[in-house]
Image (cartoon, rainbow, N blue to C red):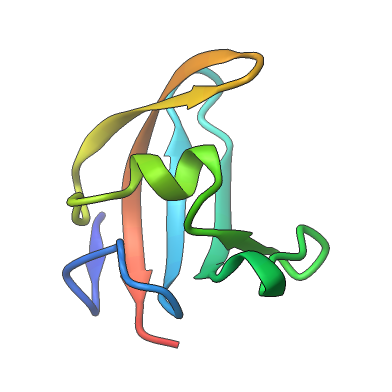
Length: 82
């Protein structure tokens, strides 16, 4: 079931849940600026591979993340305003 609280996942400050379509793991993180990024919290930069891949995507979209270890498919599951 898709949860839609905020439509667009690309703005900083939003909390996004995404599912890796290869292994179906889900991760929830907040999209932040480069200086605020901290994977332990988890806060990721909008300039990171997944942050860049989120550009212009909304809940339900499937998109490709181009990471240093290879590309993978991700689906945006939920987005909440922080």
